[in-house]
Image (cartoon, rainbow, N blue to C red; front, side, top):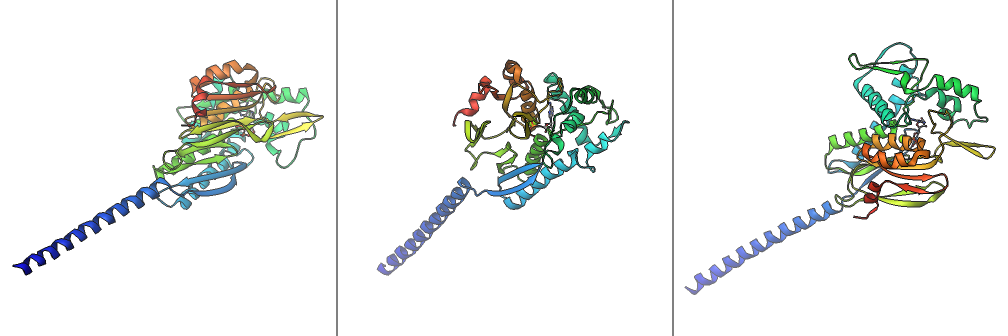
Length: 350
Ligand code: ADP
Ligand code: MG
């Protein structure tokens, strides 16, 4: 009898130990998985495309390194397709013809969206300034700094061969025609479009990936840092490269800045920068930097360029742009900072 009892106790102990061990293992697994989920590691890829430095920071349950490469290839694809200086680009094909040109759906939609941004910004954003941009030499500024500014006569002639009103879209047959020798330049929106495409391809590979993609200071968020924290983005002081005038806390969406310090040359102490006022044909005056937060990068990019052009009309920019989906932070020529009331939300650490 005694013997039987002690045998039972022994059996019971073994079972208890087994249960305890199983429980411990499960707890360990839960701890380890939650630990790794809470602190995912980020892969970083730095490269040069879109005419600027790009930085991809991504974390995915799939292979983050491969995903970063897929994102980079997409940025580069969009750049090549819409680079007006590349003879093989779609933009060069359109610019080289005075007749109707059939285009693919992606191009048609991008042109249509560009024209819409032009309309809502009263022509400040203009995707058909190719001739003016060439005249000023901003298309080649990386290779050759201009040694003179164009004459008034040259500017007036280039203005006649510029402007979105000379771009015709045929929605039925998906084709485009440029009138009066007009040339497209999508430099004010292509980077934003590339960043939105980067987001799309990343989400097709892994809808839960997080991180961000940056191209020359413009940023598209893929998802919150470590799955829940905001990314902190410094808004550069346009006159002090290493100082920030504000910090933005973003878990989604995009931010873009247009500034007079990005691409410019100086002659006789005057700065001539690359964002042109389509009405005057001269570099736009009024603002020295405009930052836009929006839920997509196309909106942020197009509105930052338009807001910069409309610098002298800051009230329109600050009051109307939020209705188009853009929150505004503008620095005027004299250093005054103007913000839309909607911008304050992004300046709060969450
Ligand atoms: P960046 O590309 O330096 O970030 P922007 O997004 O403001 O700056 O784009 C500037 C580019 O847009 C110019 O280099 C030129 O190709 C084009 N551009 C210049 N003026 C205008 C304008 N008024 N509307 C649309 N695009 C413009
Ligand atoms: Mg822009």
